[in-house]
Structures are given as C-alpha cells and as structure tokens.
Amino acid sequence: AVHAGDFLAASPAEPAVLSPACTAAFFDGDGGNATLAAAAGCPPGVANDTAAEFGLDDDVLVVVHAMGEADPVGNASTVTVDTRYGTHTVDMRRSTRDPVRVDRGGVSVSQRLVSIEGTQYRLTVWVW
Image (cartoon, rainbow, N blue to C red; front, side):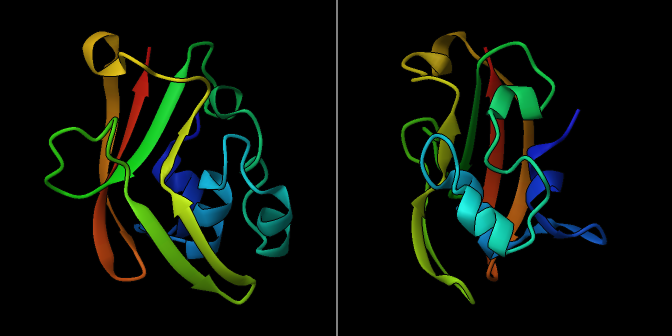
C-alpha cells in the first residue's frame, strides 16, 4: 500500500519533506488537481480516488495540521505554496466522504512529521 507521506515526498531520500506542488495538487478539492499534478510531474495517482490509491476498501481521511493541534479532524492547516505553476492556497484535508464523527469512531492509522516549505506539520491518516 502507498503511504501518504511517501506519495507526496519531494524526494525518496527525504520522505518527510513534502513537494509543495504535489501536496497542493493532492489536497486541491476532494478529487485533487490533475492538471497541476501532471504539470509538476507528481507520482501517478495524486488525483485518483484516495482509498483506492492507498490500497484500502474503507473510507480515508488525510489531514496535514499544526504540530500541537488537539482536534486535527476539524482543524486542517490551510497552506499557501508558491510553485513554478502558480500560487495555490489549499485546505490540507482530503477525504473519501465527510468524516462527521471520525474522531469518535475512526482509527488513526498513520502519523508522520512533515515539512512543507520549511514549516513543520503533522500528517495524519484515518481509516474508518
């Protein structure tokens, strides 16, 4: 299965450093931004169905949030990234459906400290 942090990494040598363009493409709306992903040379699948891309049959929520955020489900970070393809402001939250109560019934299956343009965040993936 693909891991969100590896999928968005700027380089395999630095898996915690996320590509600004690929990260913006992944989080741009519920379906991603296929045009930006193609232009930036992102890994195939950035704009694909999230659960299918991660090899899951369940619903998935991926959130990038502040390091000390107590409620990351409802408080994803909004990040503006400058790329050679333009400036993109994205809500760093993508889900297969609205996770209304994922914080009570979901399972946090993965967390990783990540960096986007030098700022540290926590990337968390829930499956429910």
